[in-house]
Image 1 (cartoon, rainbow, N blue to C red):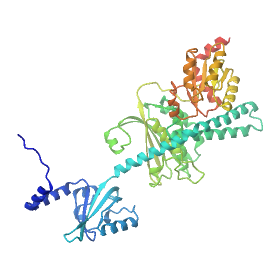
Image 2 (image 1 turned 90 degrees about the horizontal axis):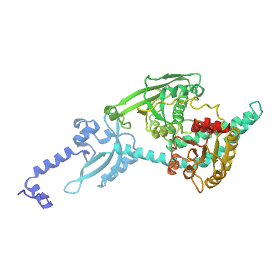
Image 3 (image 1 turned 90 degrees about the vertical axis):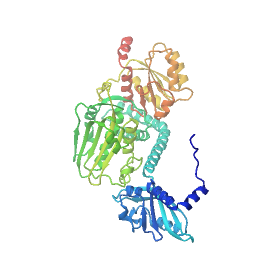
Length: 535
């Protein structure tokens, strides 16, 4: 029968120590030598008398280098003198000191430790030595910082989503009536330029709202399988207007590039924001290079860049020859409202928008920059193996063909938003049925004789949501297509269980012409049938 195990009690331990003190000392020495924490023993004056192997491994200093030195060799300069005065006052009073310090290795690399310093007393109670026990927490602090950053982004994203709806409706009213006015007065009218300025201001405000939603990852996406090279060729036609004449634009696409699944509008936001950022970093001119490449990241690369998992990616690389980003700014560049530009020269949303879009799209972004050496942003988008790429250009939907003969049910609870949209659609030739909310739309549909080809409905409305309305009318009009619109963020839209929202969805604020283009995209080949009925 196997003997039962017994835990040694205090009496047994004392007996063993009395009978074989050398064995106990060897055990204690072995325990300290094998301890994973950094152990340093100093005399009363603070001179090092012992360090364990973990100290040598973590700091890069050998025992021979530190014996007789003081722990000041690890001083990083990131703590003020007050901390060290408090530390010495505590341990010299015979108390235990506990704190978090940033130390520096022999290589110059900083590391963070939880430090405990315990005074050692002799038989008469006098302090003769100090034992410092350090536990490295650098990785834990990095994860805590990443979590805090994510929480901060989510909090601001929630704030942005909360104000987006009302703000977007106001912009819709401004831009819609300005569009109708511009179409009616003609380019020769003396007020044409004034109206154009109103439209430009409304679009800039709309871009700002989209940026707020993007960095909070709340923007509704309309995902497509894209050829990144073709998309960049189209964008390169607009980039020279964004840059200056003293900046050279270089495109370096890889042939046979893999496909990615992205929102083309969000891709445009990413490229434009990075290009604008590069432009501002090159006040004396320079070169902006945009590169695409297929990459396959293995475990070795992942070990270096833990933020990107192994796999097959399409990489978008944007490099400038500008002033670069200092090390004090680099950890903060993706934070919302963080900017190094002069007051009034930047909102601090550009790179935060890029970060939010990339993360929402399932991608990863990494930046390398040194002051005076320019900056390189590398974005890794997951490669998709199936699906044909859809070119993103004006040829996708003919913008000149906005006219139609179909019947459209337009449901919008904001009168100031509904009125100009109805006026525009009637000018385009559509038969328009108005509904100021879900219940009113049901009544209007019941009174209408004939088919309804398309319903355009707000998602969030009092009494009945757009999704509920679509389900209710689907029985009577099974062939009716639905286009959902909303100024709310994506999480609000998804809570209302909107079917196919990524395909038939238009984010407010939008222009009337973009509404007309989207209508033709949703109706598709139904236009021919509508024309036949009208004739």
